[in-house]
Amino acid sequence: GEPVLESTAALEYMKTKGIEHEKSPRHRKEGNGVVERGVRSVGESARAMMIEGCAPEEDMEWALRHSVVCDNDLPTRANNKMASPNAIWAGVPTLPPCSRLMRAGPLFCLAYPLVYDAERSKHEDRARPAIYLGVDGYSAFVIRDLRTRRVYYSSDVKFYPLTFPYRLSLSPERRLTMDANIAGARSELSNAPIIAPGTVQAAPEATGYQLQEATSQQLPVDNAPDTPAEPYANRIRQP
Figure 1 (spheres, rainbow, N blue to C red):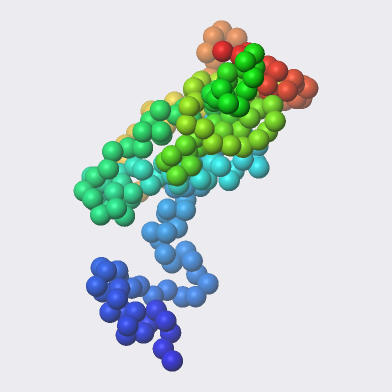
Figure 2 (figure 1 turned 30 degrees about the vertical axis):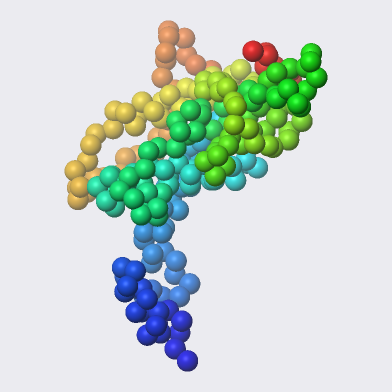
């Protein structure tokens, strides 16, 4: 019979839903530019979160999940930035931003989830150091305990957005260099000229990020070997 997506019934159904059917060669996924651009946006933001938090590669899954959640919660240019994809799927003009995303810190930052009375004895800690891994279904925060490495959910969490536990495993020289590289990248982005749509610009020479002198002393070069670090939980003071 006819291919499923080319059948009369399928075409009529898509027409009633406002879906435009565009054909493309098989095994050529780059032909779907809208989907590929969405994949690129999710991948780039996830990689930025990994670099900012100095997270290991095995945590890339959490970065991708959090990137998708943030992308779906933000307004899109497809409708003049008036509604987010979540609002479009819900069939409403607009939805307020996710309150938990607004409360939480950046991904992989330090967090102290509350240990409820029923889960601890009288003299045990009321909060334990953990790493923030994102929001699950907009209902709870995903947390990884720094002592036990157990991943669980909590709704009562205090965040420290400027502290990233994964960075404590680096030597001081590497931490300083990494922070300078991130600051240099942010500075270049903030000072980048605005290019008008349709303007063709020559690609600049790939020189990499150069460390700028914040003081009269030159920042150390990232060639020092890593030094053994204490376990994350041992280096974080209880609140």
